[in-house]
Image (cartoon, rainbow, N blue to C red; front, top):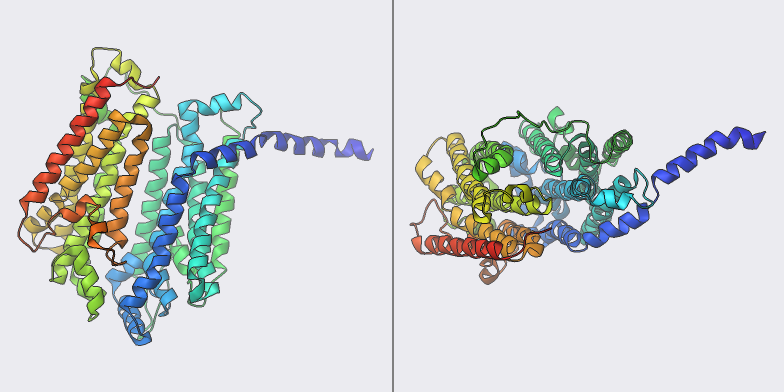
Length: 545
């Protein structure tokens, strides 16, 4: 009788086991596919945080200097919105303040990319259908993707904890768990969104939009948060608590850690994972709960260029609105730029290396323009590599089967990529000037002068795609290297020869100094050469079959 009574429970356990069949094999496959990308992400995120110890110890050598900068940053609403409040004036506390929020955002980006890559993208390309023809359970791909993200975030947490252990083991562990936990929140969110949307591009876009909104919520909450008179930290706004990025901040690493905040992270991960598992069990492979609308039977797509505009208009609109908002936010911080460095000569030197001008206001504006340019390079690379995704998914084949040549097809996407860069840098300059309230011409010029470097990295992407399609993804490496060198290179006091590896290092640092046309024209010519070489390679090689 006991065996008969236990039969339904045993059957249910066996059914769940079958749904996870093949998880280990898929996990090993995912880790093998990400054997280069994942270590790079881990080293960049962890290295950025750990390297902050040396730079901040150099900047603020004494406890008095650290306490002074902590108080001034906590009292400055602009700086609180950018980095968050300072909860501790130790070296570890300043590292958590300066790098914690950005590390959490980068971990979230890494996680959403990893999860979507191994779920919706696998289905979109048809590889998952082939794998599922073997002994692979329904929920095995999702489980393998989440485990891959868990491995990546655990590695980030381990690097941060080990690298900062000398500043205090408890604080180092708290910061590592906060950053890795934020990554897992957005990993499970991406897993849920991937079940709802029909394309990998839309799944990444929706999750990234939620991440951006979370960062804005955190910034708005911290800007309006209260600070203790003459002290550090203060009470967090409701808006900050509504943001997962704000949860990472409120763990308060190196400042009387709040371990219970990690329970919020664990709860969010658990709930979103359950939703993702429930959704994946209720849909057919390749389908979604919100399928893409096919549109009218008759349209106005008169050519390859119109098709490219139709495919990339959502991306261009999203980037444009994002750059406009970022321009307005950072433009409002210009007046408080001097408070960022105070009387610290070492900090002033670093800021001037980033901005290239002795006047701190001009240096701040030049730095922001340069950062916008480096981020715009990510847009250009993504837009150019849309050609690669169209080809590998075989959507380009029916287009090229008609009276459309390869160069005409590619030129439509390249026009969106390179012309879109002009648009987003223009709105960034307008946003900066609008919030600052003056200097429209110089600020707009400072943003537009970044375009030759942006185009150069876009040209590198065209070259790799056209001549070496299997290495096309390496274009992200060029853009990422430029961003890393521009972001943390000056703070680490890297030699100028290393900083010069980025094309942005050769541009004039406007506003402020005289315009230097030679590097601008040289980089523009280099971008043209790279694009032409890439198109020649595309015309001569075989298309992916």
